[in-house]
Image (tube, rainbow, N blue to C red; front, side, top):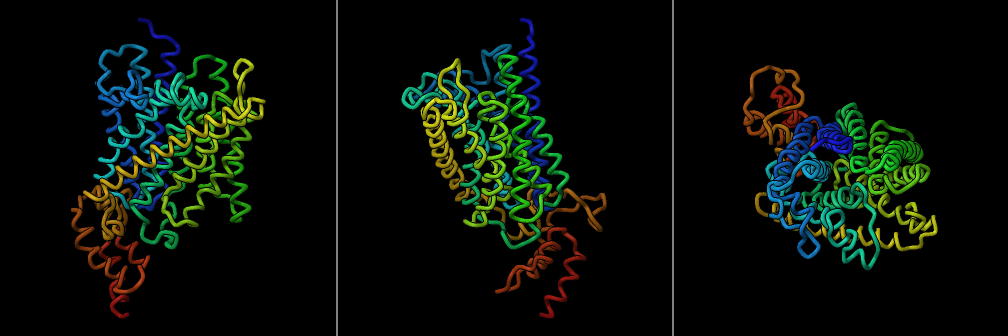
Length: 463
């Protein structure tokens, strides 16, 4: 069996998509506080390990092939990828990288405060109960695929690279999990929650953009389709970045580096479902709308009081909805038939897209609530207050991304020195009885520095 150019392109694309998850770790890691950055990167990396194994054993089987009630595939049909060869194995590997990235996206909503063991338990269950059924229903021959029961009633859904399967499913899951885990201490008040490493954010966003060309174009079947996808994947985030920066300038007086990175990612999210089905000019318009929409959506967490730490809901759910529903207006006709409202195609495509959105929101939202609450009520999804103040890098991994002062020596410092010995006194300084949290004392605990904690002790005692 000879390898073809299409085989090679899909393998290269799979590698590009796999790179997106470590890139996401950098993007998220830079957005957190210094004392939680490694934990954020680890949540992305461990998602690769877990989902890679799950996908080979039963995940791929559940997302394709022989269906059960049109909702999910038989998990034993190709268990362990048994029976797959050549191009089919390449497709299975390519599809697995999408599953890896999707669940990793959710982690940004619970940054700084989630137990690593709880996340490790959440990942395989969510992939099995949410991602695989959605992938089967839309891409694998299920209810919303060609010939499916939902398609027969409402029309064919367009979701070329995962607006519903990847973006909306992870965005609503992020919202539900953020509500279950609860707010970070100092949410909306503590300036220490600002991103600690903006260059990491920019690097992560750039690598995400690089990988997204494989994410969108990996399944292209013709040169014409691949060219359209490539240009749309270039231009939509460009336009979204510009419109986000203009929105920031108007609303807050300054265009920011974080805004530029977030705007580009919002545009990439928006073009994901429609990359092969809209014109480059329409892609520019989609980018302009998605950049403004997501810039406004991220502010809803302050208005409604839910702590979506790294704006997963605002960017991925917000732009995922915009991109998926926009196809009802700007989808190109196929062979002169159909298309969106702007091309005279009627409301049929908009109805199909809306139904897909509603099913995705219901399935992912409900199942995430069940999984998240079950974990939260048993082993607990959130670290203790003391561990959060000390930093989840130390409490969950006994590591630190940065070493300063007395902590910069090469010796390994047992975890108990940072959590049980120093913070016990320092937390009392940071949170005196009946009083507010002292942000400076919290930072001292976060560094794990005995000297810093001792410097704060006399001032508190004098009070």
